[in-house]
Image 1 (tube, chains in turn orange, blue):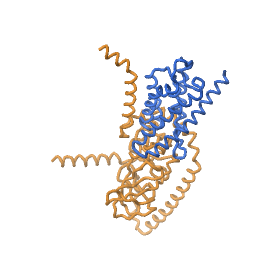
Image 2 (cartoon, chains in turn purple, yellow):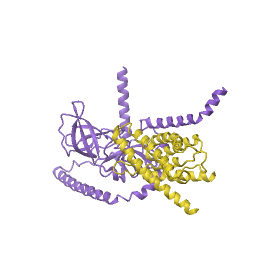
Image 3 (spheres, rainbow over the protein chains, first blue to last red):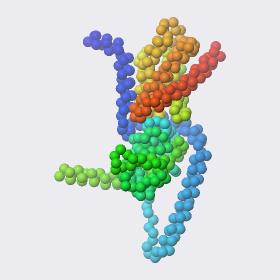
Image 4 (cartoon, each protein chain N blue to C red):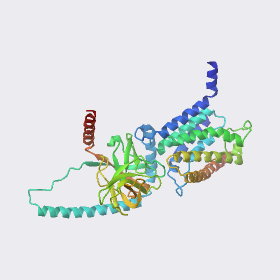
Length: 287
Length: 172
């Protein structure tokens, strides 16, 4: 017993060392980004305060470019409003008074947030925003900016949240080609922050350079039709039946400033229906 | 003693804050300065191993928290801190004649200190980029990145060192 104690005391630094190595390996190789404590991410109170102070200085650097992008976006939306107004007026002229065009209740709502920390050079990139549970942010909300899709909320603190960037292989986004409606899943290949791969598209579709890629709306995270990017080139996959597209991302991840987290008002109901479906499927299987 | 604790406490915080800024830098798509390990390099040589491991691990963990790189810096820091003493012994075999146990240009002389610092920085950068490239294996690019980051880090650390030493000389 004495010998054992002596041995332990003699080599205690070795055990301390091994303890730290194993702890960090556990952190490193725990691949699921969802089961993380808030305290170990940049969404914790101390880290977000420091990062917010830092970003209050750096957020001014890209304002000129961002402003220009916003102006262009604004102009495009204004044109769209004019076109839609004309169309609506035409429809109203053609239809008799009794059948009014019904206003549609919007299923989605937005929370505006500022990016306080962002990376593009890591293999797994994350974004930190300055809104949290106090502002109605919950995990698995979609995040977009004025150009296109940014990512998905992942870990939420009280006044800050961590977002999985689209530049992160953990993020798989269901997208479709706007022109013909074929859909696949978008994954970042870890190389260039301007490009991602849209995989598992059926072979029979015709894809051209310049085709617009939009969100499919099959999950409750993003509404249908948000721009993701444009096709840069088409390449064959290993199996014969699929092709993958190299997509130039619409979002400029180097200059993220203000983003919007999308609140889906019907998410709870959708989840409920889905879980009911699963349950009934299970019982059918069991029976 | 208390003065040393205070000194290293401040150094810890300053290094973490500087690293937040440095982590955003990516020079030529290759080099990122990793200057926070300056804290580990400067820890007194007579500090017990347990303390060195503990401080290194937590330094890495704090940087990880800010960068959202779960455990990557913590692992590399702990591994590097274990190699600190052996590297030091290679360049400085007689350790009993050190009046000041904190490694610096004054206490070791420029040549020995630079060799010690450069070796540790290169080791750390190799560790970090090897851990990073578990998922994306491109050996040549990984080595190039490690090398470029090492060079950039060494240059910055040398700058910090000369700043600190000139200030101290003036005070004397």
